[in-house]
Length: 98
Image (cartoon, rainbow, N blue to C red; front, side):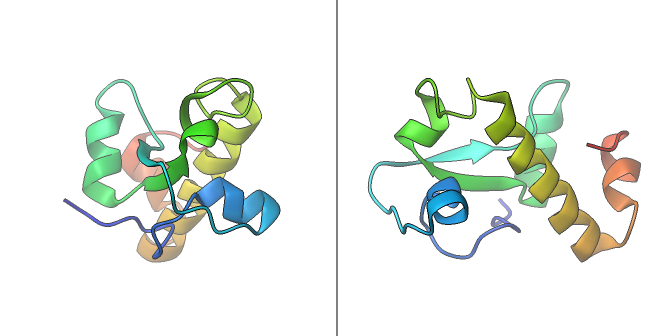
């Protein structure tokens, strides 16, 4: 399967982005897009990141509970995808713009 196009190091993406902390323990893989076959596309195109458990699946910080954190990941994924594949390619591939 494809490696993440958003990060090279195995560390919590949101700890690094929000707090400039390098959290490397208790990591869980998160597919940024989900539903309607989009999880498989996330895997195929590398739209996934490592998250610590708190940022992945614990309220209130976890992306499964915090719409703001989820939106940050979706916007970063769109930017990375368009940067790699060309402007507008995200909307073309996924049928929408975030």
